[in-house]
Length: 117
Length: 106
Image (cartoon, rainbow over all chains, first blue to last red; front, side, top):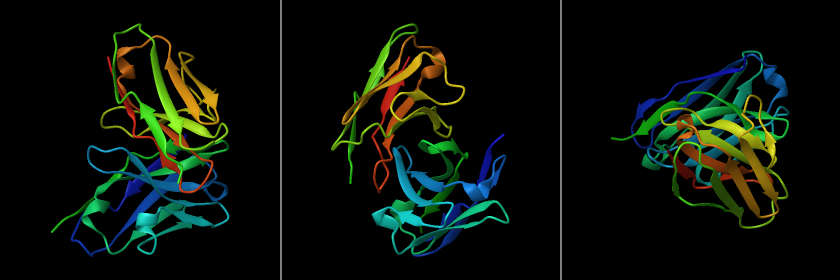
């Protein structure tokens, strides 16, 4: 059974930083493309970042230069380092595993990040 | 950036009725479109990939159609558990984008 468990969210002041983690199990992590998707309170879904099995990375424009996605295949874990956080980064952050013909086949339950003073 | 426009914003129907949800892309995306269901307080769930293929475990009453710029998700006979927000998403080009969602109320 595929499982994705996010952690690392919390309350942070504007300009601060956080690192989210996503522990994966139930599939061959190193062979799969992984992504982060966020959802601001009461809003829709927004793709944030993707890292391929080969290590290529992609970001939405609003986080370029501030967020870094990475993976540790030995630990089956996906990361999102978030720096220079802003109030509009407040959201639930989901990690997701890609399928052969889909961007987000499986999702974690999400981790809430609140940026506020 | 490819913009996906979903309509209607809200759909209020009764159990057993048919729901038809629309997703229109700002440019052709071939059939690289997925549909996701998000129930309140839950993570999204993949329903349909590549416009018309049901994901594992998705009931046959969910079906997708379309190609190019116009796509449809049909729920043939609504059940109370189908109350949710439904999102379309394209994977043709970066950035990956979602539609704004259609809320289905039953």
